Length: 487
Ligand SMILES: *[C@@H]1O[C@H](CO)[C@@H](O)[C@H](O)[C@H]1NC(C)=O
Ligand SMILES: *[C@@H]1O[C@H](CO)[C@@H](O)[C@H](O)[C@H]1NC(C)=O
Ligand SMILES: *[C@@H]1O[C@H](CO)[C@@H](O)[C@H](O)[C@H]1NC(C)=O
Ligand SMILES: *[C@@H]1O[C@H](CO)[C@@H](O)[C@H](O)[C@H]1NC(C)=O
Ligand SMILES: *[C@@H]1O[C@H](CO)[C@@H](O)[C@H](O)[C@H]1NC(C)=O
Image 1: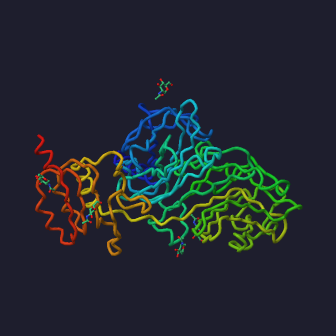
Image 2: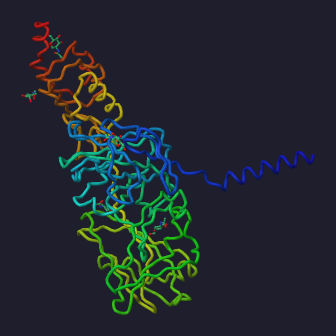
Image 3: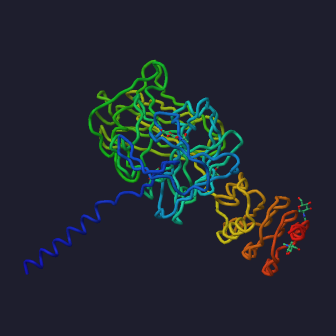
């Protein structure tokens, strides 16, 4: 009987352990161009050797910033390999992820070329490198929060004619499904692109994991800002522990709340301005903790928060709202911004001047719908059977990002199915030598197909006749007859 009870107790405790301890989040880090797995200080992070790429060349790397992971290699995509090159990573559990890409510079004597290119994740454009990026620590990577629901992630690099895309690392780090949830408008079809992430009142740059932040936080990078302006404000810091910092869903490191800036008598309003892309929605996250010894109770520091002049939070009283001193308070708001700057102003209302510990600004991006997977497979079969040359770079999704479709493909959006499909293919005069794949009949929305001026062997598949929408078929100047005669 006793043994029986013990067994039940054991089962009971095991179930307690499994329900309270959360499993570690999925984390995949790739050291691009590396032939072996790599571990890096200070957290002994594991970087997998390079895999999942569509092409490109490994090379030795120069890291443009001290915040770039200390990896020695990169992968670059020469222009001869075409304008679109990707990484496709499989077996990613369904969930919510931070996807981060660090850019690199090829280590070569006399090489000071700063490449400019664009990056898409799952077919949605998330980043354009801006000239001068190598001299700003917070511009040496691109990062976005994205839901990955079909077990894979596709990350593509789009050449813009300014040098060769070069990538040091790719990180796919799972975060809480509710991380940065701002309300019903934040559906799974929304991507948050990190625009700015600041830790105030300190000169120390911070990654979550360097500060023993929870792994579920996604190892964020915090750019330090000691003060907002000369003499307008001053830094504050504390060694006291902070309550409610590392809570779900965002798991912020406690250290984030142990420093802040406070405004001074000379300039009671605390203001911070950054440049942004105009006509976008931005999700703003503000972090507070009352760490100033002068404030001991609610009512002693009350301020409004304005964004580009409009009040977004009225009468913030940190001690009252967080419940105590040395306690984290996080507020978020999504706003439409028409101009090229965002200015956040803290305007004192009562008692002591304003205080702020950290700021996060994300651009809200509607995720693109992808191309019907049956049509993508048909195009891939066509690519193989026609022996499409490298420079075509038919990688990633054929239709999205809309700014970078596959060359030769015309796309249409099916609103009801929320998918793209191919309605035209023009591969005329490309010197293609190949044969006609049967799978072409899977392009069931095709209206025109122009393969004139190539060398296409074999018979036209009868299945082509099943594409009822096909109106234009041009196979003229098929030169395989000449070759046939020569041979
Ligand atoms: C990269 O550097 C290593 C030595 O660190 C050298 O042996 C190798 O040849 C270099 N590779 C290239 C492509 O320059
Ligand atoms: C963001 O703010 C909204 C209210 O505007 C709130 O409902 C939501 O819980 C907040 N999100 C987080 C993660 O704190
Ligand atoms: C911004 O959000 C509003 C409300 O959700 C939406 O109607 C609008 O299309 C968004 N604007 C942009 C540029 O995404
Ligand atoms: C097919 O492409 C060739 C070369 O670009 C063009 O001359 C021809 O008119 C096209 N055929 C049709 C039917 O549009
Ligand atoms: C091209 O010409 C060759 C030789 O006449 C023929 O066998 C082949 O079927 C033709 N291909 C197409 C697609 O018309």
